[in-house]
Image (tube, rainbow, N blue to C red; front, side):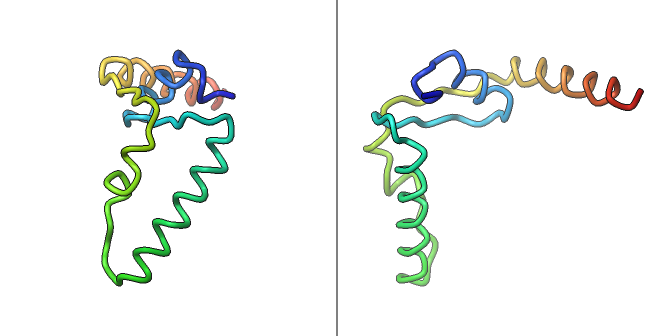
Length: 87
């Protein structure tokens, strides 16, 4: 899937200006949903915030880091696209 495409993940990281973490699985969306459910349950059970990345950081296959220079480029493209859509 898309999570196995390094170039695509790098673009996603830069567009949202956030690091992207992938798993070593072809069902990463499903596993991500399960991790979020476990995370929410543990917060509810312990009645305190628990950092998501501390819980599951050993599961990450690869981290694609955001590039702030690329983010500036994508922000400009978004601005131009929004102006074109007004026409």
